[in-house]
Length: 256
Length: 368
Image (tube, rainbow over all chains, first blue to last red; front, side, top):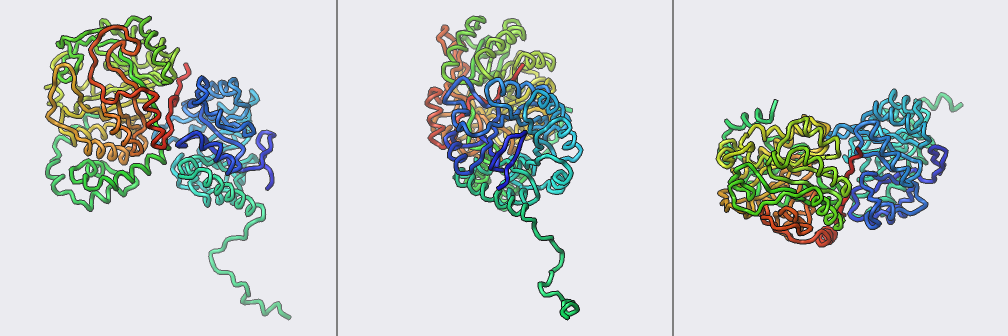
């Protein structure tokens, strides 16, 4: 498969995974191996650097790229602080900006996200902002220095698939950055759908972590992502409202 | 606007007639709904819904795992003073009770914090009786500053404050508030709160809103089961959580189901919440409020708590002691109530893991 490039760093896999919601941290390395995911996000607020049993970093193999997220931040200022702590703690330069003020629907605050992106990109972070799908906000994130944008497919943890499809398609067509569909993907078929649309990658957490067999589900997602990407690259046939006869009705006009 | 307006609407409602006419078909429909209405919630709290507990449990488990994953967060309570100016008939700290009173000095708070931190707990709940002269906001601020050195999250369960006072606490790192209405039935409220500032029903009722307006991130509410009619109290506390969730998008809300435990003063409850009803209420809360946290304290016995894992519960207290200075043996003081689950933090963790759930010690850290 062609490589995913984020902030100049190349990845073979287009499936990003998460660390939340697993029944045991021991499931995480097994899932990473089976899914071949090379990037994993983790909420810095849950990382306990003081206790090695508790520290999630001890469960993530060294060859995996950490994508700490700013979950819990309510504004740009808090997201920036969390990002700096993550970097100082040795989590690397990647950062997923999450700024959420609305605890009922958990919708990201695009305006604050743009502000945080600008500051952190200027500081050399590879910034992947999580956002409510919107073309103009996506363009602003690009101008602010984002390495990719991560629109939500449907509300986080909902497993409802890509309900924002039309908005994401517009972003894919018009923003010259990798578009990573994040949140809402509940089934491998939905991941394949995102990839067929031209998404550069998908981030899946709940659907994998909450499966009774996270490793097997991780592998299923990996296969779906590969299939979707292959289909996108191979260029799918046009859809048509009506049946198209494989032997055209006017074919006789061209037979002689 | 106050939640009181919602309570007033309920006052004219003929609950008895509604429960009598409710059918099992309606209860089944309520269980199956993606988004429950207020009536669906009431249906699930009804005595007739007891025939559908297993179906409710399966739906609640599905909803819970999707929303929160297989995780249980742990916290520990720390009492810093049991002096109180209130006269709550059901509470061991009632000012008229002849009990051993204790008030921790700041160095004693630090000693307690060090001892508790050794258990691995990272989230602490700071509790105190209502005695403003002795336990003023300045003292609480000093206590919080000490606790912030040892813990990632500090939540307060103290007497109600003004919005500005909650803001002060938020600024030094308090990220949450626990405040129980105790009983939503106004008449009963007045009959069990005989004196002190707590006897002001409205002041108590509007407290979670003052906390939310002050920007506190997590707010935990509940009714104390045993004081009033069980279904009405469960219903109004659930509606209160829904009202707050809808009105204050910036805060996360959770709900607790404390049952009256034996305490100094010997209050005898007329309304006994049995285990089956307790489970039913947990399930009803989970289905009505899919995003709300549900806390279960050590008021409940170990085996019962363990059986609740997977049914919608998200938070456990562990290794709790309800007397002041108890963790580092700082002298005699009477507990607020008797603990029913006496397991250590490590034993509680082991039991949670045995159920296939991950223990979360650190779920939040407020950076100030």
